[in-house]
Each structure stands twice: as C-alpha cells, then as structure tokens.
Length: 323
Ligand code: ADP
Image 1 (spheres, rainbow, N blue to C red):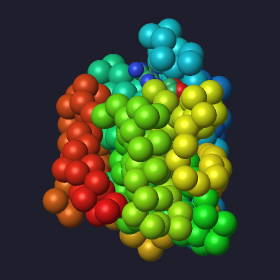
Image 2: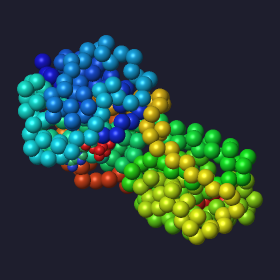
Image 3: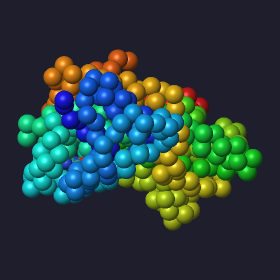
Image 4: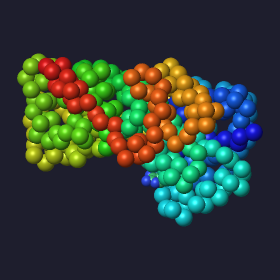
C-alpha cells in the first residue's frame, strides 16, 4: 500500500481545508494510507506527521484556514534543508507528497521533484499569481470578501462625501485589486504591473467630484510602489485638492479568513481528487489547477519558472466603466 502525505504551505487560503479533505478521502478510496504534515515545509523538516482517516477530516469543508497549519520555512529553501526533508519522508516510508499552496510552495515542490521524489502540487493562494491555473483555490473567497468590504465603504463614503483609498492584498500581483475594482465599481485601480502615480489618483478623485459623484473609491494593490498610505502622505505633503475628505482602509488579512465560497469548495474538492487520480495513474511532478474551466495538470518545471500573466485589457475595462 502506498503511503501518501499532504501539507499546506505559505499563505493560508480559504478552501485549503476542503482540498485536504478531498485528498485524504480520495486517497483512502484509492487504497492509500494517508498522512498529514503539520505547518508546511517547517513541519516536514521536524517530521511532524499525523495519520489521517476519513473522520480526521470531517467537519472542515466549510472552515477557512487549514487544519494542518501553514508556515514559511527558509531552511527548506536550502539544499541541505531539502535533504533533511527527504530523510524525514523516507523514515516515515512516505512515497508521495501533495503540496497545497501558492507560487513559493510550488517552487519548493518542484525542487523536491527534481530530487526524484514524487510530488503533486495543488494551486491555492489568494494572490492568483500561479502559472498553470486561471483561478487558484481561495481567490474567489478573497475577492468576495474584498467586494463586500468595498460595498460597505461605498455606503459610508457616499453619506459623508468622502474618497477612500482601499488597499487589497495580492503581493506583487494585481489580480485581486483589479477584479475587486471592476466588480465593485472603483473610480480608479492601481496595480503593480502598471505604475499609477499619486497625481493620477488625485486627478481621478477630483474628476469624479467634478462629475458630481458623491464618493470616490480607489483600489490600490499592496504591491504597488505607491501603496495606500504613501499616496495619502503624498496628498497631505502636496496639499492636493481632491474635492473629498480622504480616508485610508487597508483590508489586509481580513481577506484571507472567512468561509470558503461554493466555487472554492468545489475547486478544492475537484483538485484534491485529481491529485490522487494522478498518483493512481503513476504520474507526478505536476500542478493541479483550472485551465479553460477544466481541472488540468501542468508540469511543475513549467510552473516554477513562470508567472500567471494578468490580462491588462481588464485595466482598460476598469477605466471605461469608471466614467
Ligand atoms: P506561497 O506558497 O503562498 O507563495 P511563500 O512564497 O512564502 O508562500 O513560500 C512558502 C514556502 O515555500 C517558503 O517558506 C519556502 O519554504 C518554500 N519555498 C519558496 N520558494 C522556494 C524555492 N525557490 N525553493 C524551495 N523552496 C521554496
């Protein structure tokens, strides 16, 4: 019987639990013995394995976060660290590892695969920067949370005739910011891929005021050279007249918590089952993600060297719709 372990790594994302559950139950269904690893690669280096049966993953499909815990491990980024990880896997007689995580975690998975260890990645990050998947597990939930926050901010902004700089997560990828801006009707969206100056944001606010809008919302991705606070500081230093009183809201980790949406639960469940399916077929060294609406496997060596390109036509769309 094959012994298979699963871990969650890097930034946690809503839907990781649903993926763990699917991997464990599909794995047991396929006749594997299933193990979890606590705290990602950090736990792997410590040999923090636990046996998982179908009941151990009960009651978690609706819960955000990850029951296995997640962590960042600088040691795993060294060759020596990865050899310790291999030793821990061999000691426990684990024959394959499923890594649920984002771009950094999948680079780690690729390094393990290069050492000839069978690994399957499952795409899960709210940043949506992973090559090989249109939507990673967690993106839809994070987007809905950011959108709900934006709707609430608009209500108060409108009543008080204020402008808001709303900073959303996504590291150096503008996907979450851009989609939140479009779906939420922002006046302007700033993303790391295309530099937006504080002057341009000031102009967008002032123009919105001139056009008779009672509020103005700018969505700023956290990875922008000018983040929300820097823009606010710039406005203060240069005594910018934007026609509104200004407020800054940084959504931060609020976007990573919460109950996974139906979309994320289904994507996580399908991805977990597909990961086990690959192992049953004797395949590994791939990332499971969503391509053209279908669950698909992409070789990890392609994933590790690439970034999910952001379709900049959406930025133009955001501009046109902000009139
Ligand atoms: P995410 O998976 O959310 O992008 P990180 O970028 O923080 O999160 O990566 C999570 C972990 O993956 C890191 O702490 C490290 O242990 C491992 N990792 C990241 N990059 C590499 C790499 N180039 N080689 C090996 N391991 C890596």
